[in-house]
Image 1 (spheres, one colour):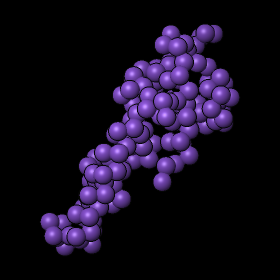
Image 2 (cartoon, one colour; image 1 turned 90 degrees about the horizontal axis):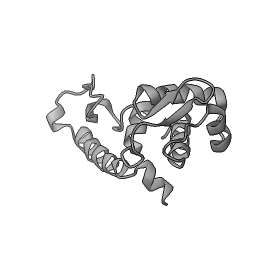
Image 3 (cartoon, rainbow, N blue to C red; image 1 turned 90 degrees about the vertical axis):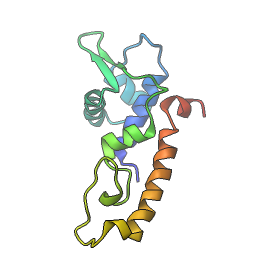
Image 4 (cartoon, rainbow, N blue to C red; image 1 turned 180 degrees about the vertical axis):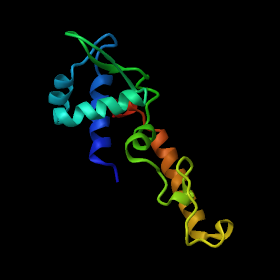
Length: 137
């Protein structure tokens, strides 16, 4: 399930993606337009900045803008940044792999192999949905 933080991050990115390329959006502007609590949004924008999805400008005319193209930012990117692994178990994860403590043989574990198939299909779907494609739906 997508966390509230990831959902708000996506809403903020959708807002930023719909602005003119030269527009810098203030936090309050984004919060009001996307119905996100301002304090929560500030933390989310910092996380997005650390993830190199948005940039910021300081000062009176400061705010946030997209660093990456709206055609490049996928649901998978944002899910991983805010919610971690896409896989349902750590042993089936690509980026957050951990061996299960109760597993005797990963190579023959039917559960692991089934969850890898689910991870692959989920990942494929999430990588196919960009911020730009969400705007055009």
